[in-house]
Image 1 (cartoon, rainbow, N blue to C red):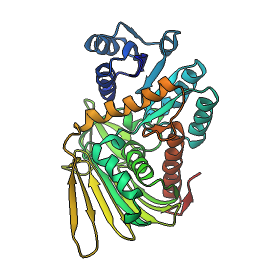
Image 2 (image 1 turned 45 degrees about the vertical axis):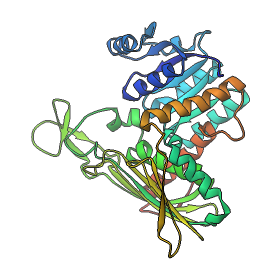
Image 3 (image 1 turned 30 degrees about the vertical axis):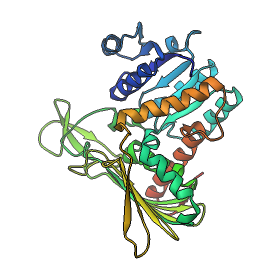
Image 4 (image 1 turned 180 degrees about the vertical axis):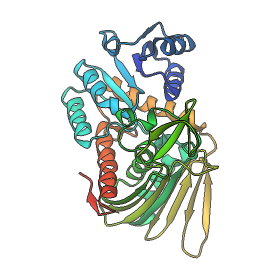
Amino acid sequence: MVNLMKVALIGTGLIANTHAQALQSLGHELLVCVNRSQERGQAFAQQWNIPQCSTAFQEALSDEIEVVHICTPPALHYEMIKAALLAGKHVVCEKPMCIEPTHAQELAKLAQDRQLIGAVVFNVRFHEASQHAKAKLADPAFGPIRLIHGAYLQEFHALPDAYSWRYQPELAGPMRAVTEIGSHWIDLVRYWTGLEVEAVSAQFEAFDPERKLREGVMHRGGEGELLKVPSEDVAMLSLRFSNGAIGNVVLSEVSHGRGNRLELEISGTQQSLWWNNEHPYQLHVGEKFQGFKTFTYPFGDGFGQTFKASFEAIYRDIELGAISPDHTYASFEDGYRNAAVCMAAMRSSERDGKWVRCE
């Protein structure tokens, strides 16, 4: 049985609620939450029965805290993670871990040197069907992987849309679709296959770089304050993998009717496999001239359960004091590899799709 830990939660936005629910369902003790708005922080603390709320990040680094969960916008992650590690805390961070790959690499080494667990919340790994997909790809019957393709489609940034931190580079960083949703797709490919993305050719498109803000909502035209939004609504990435396989992915935050569709298809020399998280309990495997079989895994419990399962895995290693060789969650090293792919995509888009190595 995992020992119960004393936890601090940084940020009290939407995803922080999912963290709080999963942590409390596992019995861990949320001692403090931090938000720059005292009013919003107090409301969150009251909702989750957290005894202390603060606007000061240092309150999360007190001696009694063992684990820090970071649920802030990504441009703030580096400084917060570094401070927590230097204070001797294990860290669980929302994706993406960092914008700059060099920052993520530095933090991965710092966690290792201080024998602390650093984890990134790529929860999609923990759908039950996802775990089975990884096992099927490792089976020799699948054959060496040759082709990887898919998409991650959402509708939430189609206009009109509320103006939020995701449109502010000082909080979100210079990217949006690639880091916000593409990072999940990239992580899932790496996790399932064990392959690395070696190089990227990318095209980014910001369809409405100038928008009008009225009463907190962005519009395509009309009256209102002029806003400039240079970050991408859509990205198309071509990929080269470490075993010679090729692939591509479409990332869109403006696809109407798509609440949350991550889809991934992988073809080997003997079989193909595909899955999407709009139908998370079903995994499809095909063979030449035999059609395909659908495997159903009915006991998963959807989005919230993936967080609980990921935290269970992370906290097992926190108790052990070391990353297990067969760990299933994303480590800070995974966070670094992911950041390298995202940054290579941005550099490629700036060079009109020129291939850029992921370093």
